[in-house]
Length: 339
Ligand code: PEP
Ligand code: MN
Image 1 (cartoon, protein in one colour):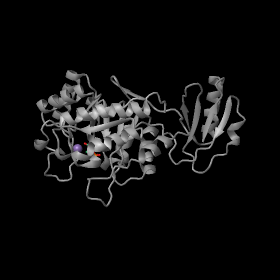
Image 2 (spheres, rainbow, N blue to C red):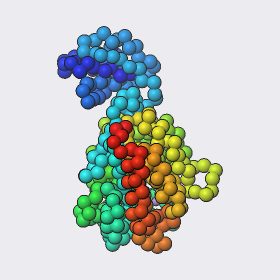
Image 3 (cartoon, rainbow, N blue to C red):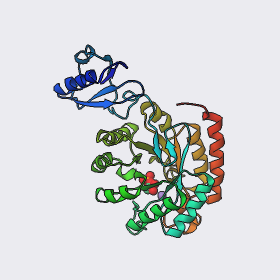
């Protein structure tokens, strides 16, 4: 339930509503808005009786929240969440473009790719230092050394960096280096990791579990917001289906659904959805057309020698062409739009 205060409500009236909510045994969450404050009621076991709050001084209206997720829902916050990282903005009207290799392999590799993607128009550099690999014999990432290389990329190019945290134990370390902390598909419902992410001072990029429904995904994001971190970016990266012409199936319908249900930014990772280079550009363009807030694309200057995901990595020239097409489609469909 959401108690919406009048724009004329005094601090005393707001405090009074909070204390009435708490006295009834619920948790009150103060939600600042553009021109008026709301108070969200959380941790209620059954339904809440609106009449307890409707008559209180300063209350404009009481809105029932019908969704299982609350803090992430548009019912709680109608305006989009906009996340600023360095010069980049995610969740506004523009397209935020994240690009880089699947894994950081060396300083030279990272700086070379960073130079290419920055020139082409990427805003944020991606690269894994801790890699979740299907086989324990595959390259597992450079670990801390990889994070140090990411810091160097940021220093030399000015691009903020996004990188994955795989476990609770490494969270502090990754948080120290990353500008955006990625939680991968395999960890979408790792609830202790989500709770730790909720205490982080950095934005979190939460990828959709490969077999997760949108409700499950939004509930996972709810854990992070519930712990106090409102800066969450959702990333659709394809779900497991019966097909074998691609690694996963990009659920393009997830974008309009999530945009309707939630105020959080949603971006698309066409690389892990496709698994095959040829499909990455068409899927990216579809993502722009359906109004995703951004893209995250794997790029490698020597994909044949990449230590992971070379087959789905674009060549720098392909990425450059993609950025131009993205700009055209965005201009055609969304320029001047404010949703
Ligand atoms: C990645 O982005 O590096 C990654 C491993 O993606 P996912 O968790 O979507 O498989
Ligand atoms: Mn990858």
